[in-house]
Length: 154
Image (tube, rainbow, N blue to C red; front, side):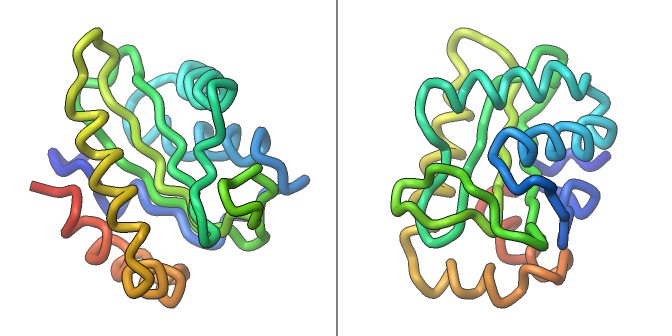
């Protein structure tokens, strides 16, 4: 595993979720990304679901930014998922989700990195050119890594 926040092994393209619900998508995300990070998929899933209860992480234009703090995680990590089918997510604009950028940070009372990364991603997703670039490359993990990695990797 790389020390970078985003790595190629945490980019998953063309993921099929059936039925295409937010809960099933979050479960699939946890099952796929937890082994790559060496964390419990159950703990990750519970954290993501708990965060959704506080309010939707469905953004706009087909994007979601599910996020949680994870016990046992040493450093902040991001995973990217593109879906074969659109996911019903209760997004801010009412559109289904095609891309999820998943933010996972270490559990702790004063985790400022969590807010910093969330802010960086949210701001970038307000840029129509960036959004279109992601959507145009949603089948290409290397291009997704380059596009999103330039924002989050140090």
